[in-house]
Amino acid sequence: MQLVQYTPATVAYMLFGPWLWVFSGPVLSGGSLLVDDAAVTPAGHCQLEAWARAYNPGRELTAVPACNHAGTEYSLGVSDFLDPSSGPLFSLGVKRLWRDVDQATVELGASFGAIWNASDSRANTWYFNFPASFALDAEHRGRVHANLGLLDSSTAGRGPTAGLGIELPCDARSLLLAEVYVQPDHFHLGEMGWRHSLTDTVSIDLLVGHQGSGVGNLWFTTVGISVPLP
Image (cartoon, rainbow, N blue to C red; front, top):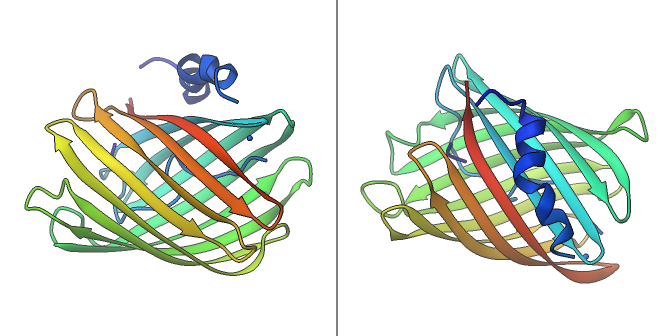
């Protein structure tokens, strides 16, 4: 996704702590959007993506700083969960583009990552993902994202993952967002919402979604932010 003397964790808690108690759905780990785009943080720069997600019952707070070194993006995330309490979860991700977002109508990338559950003291989830993004206009503001991947998880099992997302401009600084995602344990998710750019490098997301699995269905709300890091 596209892109203060506070630490990433402090920024996330200051911005999103109050939202955790406003909305009330088990919880999942993942980005403000689960369907990835074929883009990375600009070379030589860092950014923070953070979000608060609320279910009934269940609340998630996640912060994921990422930096681009030599054309490869490295990210290290932490998620904490309330009602029910679990985790924290720590994630490590690596992502690289085959075709750059600003140089082609079709952009391609690849990512690999692992997730550690602190209660298990081991990595219990591994994933590979191949995102492709298709520009819908000359400015690349409108885009369609398609993901194909492989998940190996002690809780979700092993098998393919797939997702489809879209970004549609609604004015000079705002986008309409929508996505659908499925994984091997019959988990599926759909959500839609709005992204607003406060500046050229700072944006906020507001999303509402529904997820289903073999054990039930629930609605959730997500508030997210992306900011550059000094």
